[in-house]
Length: 193
Image 1 (tube, rainbow, N blue to C red):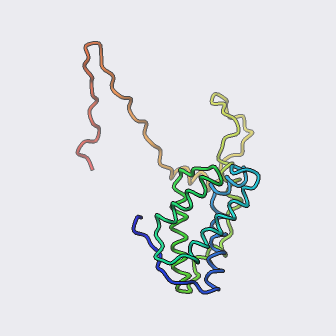
Image 2 (cartoon, helix red, strand yellow):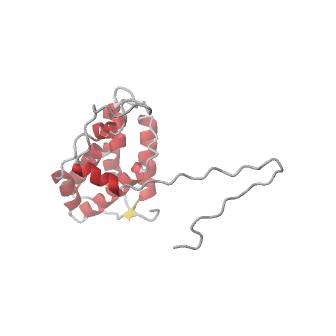
Image 3 (cartoon, helix red, strand yellow):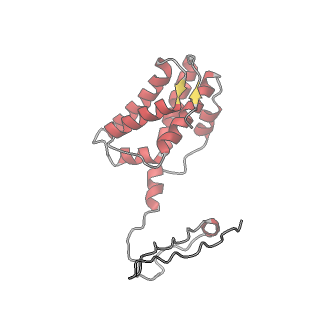
């Protein structure tokens, strides 16, 4: 990813407006950013800080001369989010969003607005923050039995759960015995492909 760039050149007024819209559409779908805004991680003016970040990104593309490097955009976004929203998005989403902005910018230089059109025409699946909250269990009673209060899984949900990959538990680290020797278990599947 270190070599991703967006070419130099200036955006037409139409392309700059499209890029501004694209930045706003991506921000509206970015779960980590929306959580920071909704939960006011940057204080009561978190929404204004997120809007300022969008304006800074647009300004970075429109007022500076290219080429535009991925690392520079990612660093600028990371610093701004860390300082203004008191957040450290460790999920890798800053890099993903930065890459998406570079792609959008490159397309806008060519007056190709297809990715922005696609964002505009696809409705987000509800509020990103509320979707992420649906995955959080409401109570942590591990010993409680299923008393039928919860709705049963639908056909689509059951199919998706069959496709899920389950991590195998990792064996515990071998500990030395009384004589100081450590028994190392054999490697399983050694030589099998």
